[in-house]
Image (cartoon, rainbow, N blue to C red):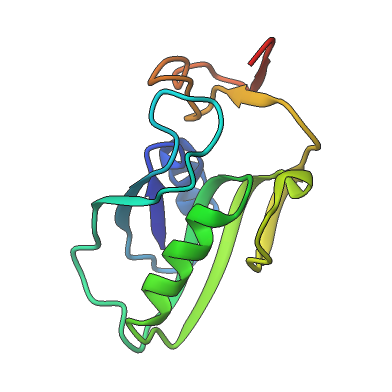
Length: 139
């Protein structure tokens, strides 16, 4: 499993405990928001994988898929590393915000609109510690 930091750290922790199979975990950290509530469209790799995924079955664990630009960029990067399979799991799918047709294999739940925080998701690095997911009013 590959967790996309920082937002998916709580979700992957819960997911790993629920999966009844041996799992190896690695992390990537991408940035496209900065301090804003909308993606800048520029994807920056801040932390890359530490192990090879060549010929391995890979599950990318993401917190939220909005525009899909960040995930599509990550997916392309990972496919170039020749995994045996590559699947994508997201806690939250915001299909209405999608601007690219990135495939998502497993979805926790979908929502139409709103900027959300909690359960690992943040606004300018705040609110990750909230135990539930909340919509930020006026964001």
